[in-house]
Length: 186
Image 1 (tube, rainbow, N blue to C red):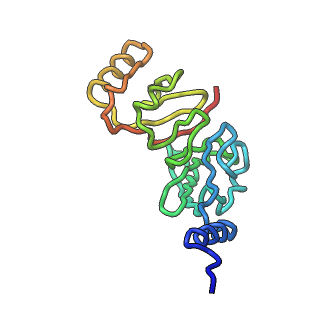
Image 2 (cartoon, rainbow, N blue to C red; image 1 turned 45 degrees about the vertical axis):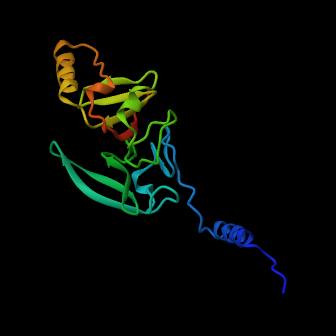
Image 3 (cartoon, rainbow, N blue to C red; image 1 turned 180 degrees about the vertical axis):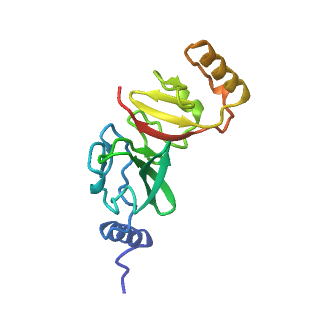
């Protein structure tokens, strides 16, 4: 009997079948935009948050938090064990969406897990030190970790003088990364 398919041919058929049946990798939402992330849209009612959002999260954990005497609901979104994002719901609508998943980036290509040195190489990035150290680029803000002693001293000096904070990659530990990203607007 004659072979109809080679080993490579069978693998190709299997790959097409798996993909067609949904067994391939999910088309994950990979972009945080000014409008939101997937089905999590800024301005949408908090009550409209679905239990699952294809390509974004498969579980929502709600907790009640307290902040300076006020209580609010914290929504944490997970894809498996990976924390994807969270929404601190202070009101009726989604005002703030904070992203933690490394696979989700801004239009400028900044994402959690990115090296701080790579963030600092982006044209137009600016350091902020109002509620801790953050960076801003085109309306998006990024929390970072890994500030070393020299960087901490620069930050304290700039704050004391009311001067613009300018940090370099050498002001961070070599493994310092972007921890989270969110949109605030221009």
